[in-house]
Length: 226
Image 1 (cartoon, one colour):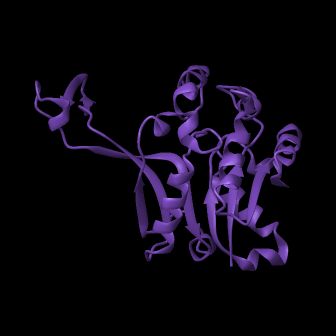
Image 2: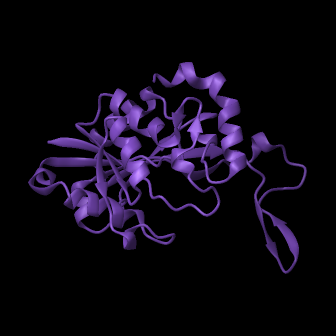
C-alpha cells in the first residue's frame, strides 16, 4: 500500500496573485512543499493538483507528478476535498493501492522533516480517520457583544496563566482512504498533532506574510532538513 502526498495549488489568488510561483528564498513557494514531501522519504508519490499550466510546469520540474483539475474545482469557494478526490480518481487503477493521503498546502512552506515523520508515525499507530496539525497559544481571547468587549479571562491576568487556545494551522493533513471514500478529509476521529513555533507561524495569503516568511528563512533553514 502507498502513501501519497497531494499539494493543491490553483492559479487564482485575489489577495496575492501568483503566490504559488513567487520566489521564497531561491525556490518558488510551491517547491517548498514538493521538496519537503520528497525528501521526507515518506511518500511513494508526490502529486500536485492544479488548474494552472505554469504551476504544472514548475511542479514537474521539481519532480512532482501533476493532475490538471477542471476549472469548476479551482474556484475561490471550491472545497479542498473535491480537488483531492479528483486527483485520487485520476490515478486510475493505482488509486486502489493508496492507504493514506497527505495534503500539504503550499501556503505553509516550513515543515521540518522530523515533524512529517512523527506525524505519519502517529497516524499509522493509532486508530483514527485523520490527523491534522494544530498550534497551541496562550491568548487573551474574547468576543464583541453589542459593541462591548467581553473577555474570556480576567482583566489583568497574565497570558501564561490563561487556558491555551488550540487551532488548526494548515501545515499537514493525513487522511485514510476509508475516510476519503466516506466524503471527508477529516471524519470524526481526528488526531491532533501539536506543532511548534516559528514554523507554524507562517501561512502565506497576503504580501505581508511573504515578508515575514522571508525574514524567518535565514534563522530556520538549517532546522528544516531540506
